[in-house]
Image (cartoon, rainbow, N blue to C red; front, side, top):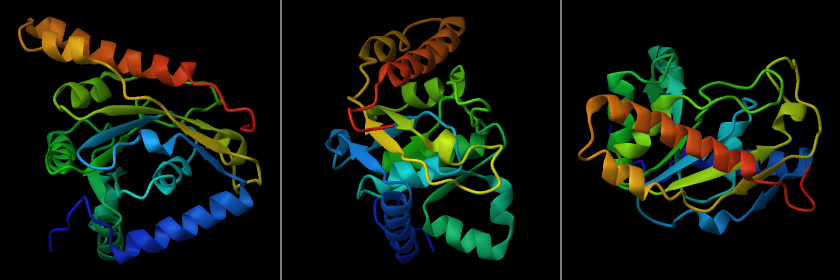
Length: 221
């Protein structure tokens, strides 16, 4: 059965409501500027990454179903496969840049879905932002979807890669204004192949600069 990436499922609804409840009560989560995410059409969400909590946290702030990237090995098990598909997860390889994974991402975007990407590629080990990888630039350039930078505050303190269990630390998420990369999308149409690779990295770097520049609101962590 092929699921519509633009529509919610009963599994997604259960996870969305339960995550929202946990984030708001246990972590006193605040969401800022969720209205900046377009209500319809393809959208790329690009966020910093400090915790396993980040994907459901980004999704819990908006009512549109978000399509997440998940390691392809998880889909090998029947039970995981059942739930991962209904959570709108896209199987990707460890590096997230395989042909099958990219096809899955573009398939979701082509029908108007929302995709969440982490430009850093992995969770930070010390709470500091990591350099952006070029792969996110490739995805952005090859799509016409608007790109929304997102900054998450507090999840490193609440539940980082060194933690055994989450801690009740206040968290917040801020949705930024759409990133303007029209100049690079235009340039890539006529430039040389070596320059194309440079553009991918430039897009990724521009995204991370936007994320780094986002400051917490007055009542955020």
